[in-house]
Image (tube, rainbow, N blue to C red; front, side, top):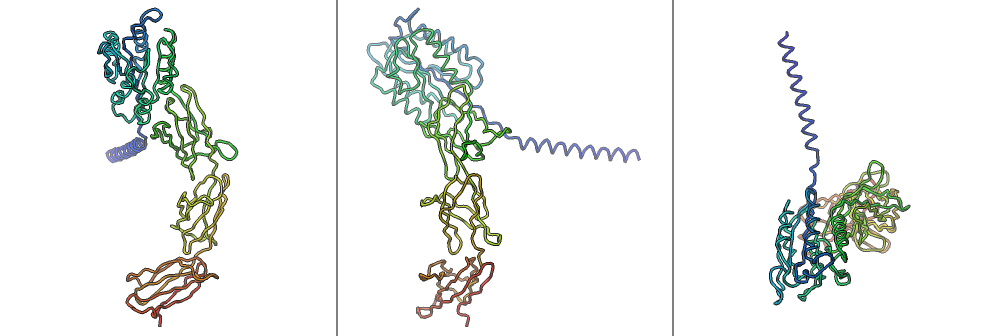
Length: 468
């Protein structure tokens, strides 16, 4: 007896263990994988041209810039998901003569390479000219391919382009190709805002203090988290619309940056999104038809609220007498327009931006309903008569068509199949019809036969060709 009790207890424990294991495994299977956090890659493009030997406040511009930049680098130690690189120009060849190819990636992107960058800043010395556009163009190769990286360029210079290049065009190409975000430029000693405004976001550093502040502001904008919410507004300007896809396009490059399905949080408010504050976005909301808002800018470090008008109502279809119809396509167009917005199945309920629509129901014959009004949060029903069934039988295969009889004459509805099939079953709207048919192997039009019949809702009509 004791042995049997122990066996039963063991079986119960084993079953409980299997149940617990199943629930744990099931829970683990349902757990969504975390998306990798984006890596911020900052490329410092540093001016080491001969003019950096010029005196500026307490020392030369070069010594001050390398000292303050090194101090900034120390503050970036131990920051996760951050990689740095250093490109220097004007340091390899003396001037004169002018060498406009004097630009080199001294330290490529890597983790924990701050000591290496600081070492390079200590050992280089100003020598040559200022190939800014050339350096920006080369920086495209400095950013190796990465699907979850945000690429930032910080240009530190005391002068303008000296090699005939176009820094504005070089910067635009980087942005249009989605290689890097709009660059930051720090100008030493003299205000070059007018010349660099087309290149990126310019900071004037007329003093050592302003240079330090400019670097701090840039790093803050680059690294501080920024949130936003998209309010999809109904007809009353309340943010009640939700559960629709949104695509964020980079305004400059046109590339897709984010895809979100809009949601409301537990408090009924639009969900908070983490997005890159350095980009400008065109937001497309995939309602039917889609709505959009262009040139959306965020304030780094602050919560931004964006409102987009997206008032919607519902549209569905029904047959008289509550008959069930499935797999019946309905073409939806804006009223008075030819473009197809959607092909909706008869048994679906779909949301549309409020307004008037023209609907073409692909029954036989087709039904066109114009100026259907979709209103805010309301379900609009479009009702059609319940179809009947016509069974068209023939003794042989051949050529024929089905027409509906109207006051103006016959209107084509359907071409009979000319294969071996000798019976066709058609769902037709109520009305008077006529079949015109000729056997396939009859060489004379005189063998053409026609029959008229009537289709009533929910009824089956047999149409026999060559019945006698």
